[in-house]
Length: 94
Image: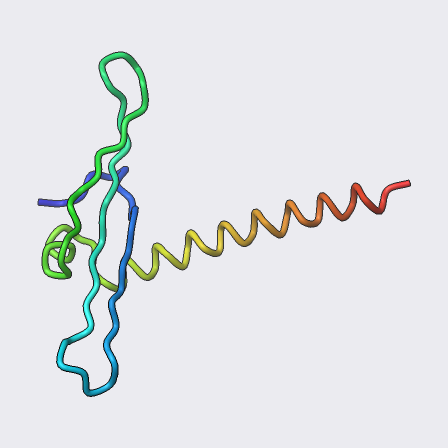
């Protein structure tokens, strides 16, 4: 089974452990699939929290999850920089 093309990473949780601790580090993901109901209203279907093995089987490996997080973070940063530049230009305008 594969993820639908409009699926995206909704949540990523990494649980680290102290060096030499009794448990292994782990992570889980929740995948979202947006849609539309019979009345035309937007919907959001969320997966249960998936283990690394479950997520990888669907095509969301740890490198994929990290790449998605990085891409979204860089896009958010670009938007924030543009908004800041716009606000600074408005303040500086006579």
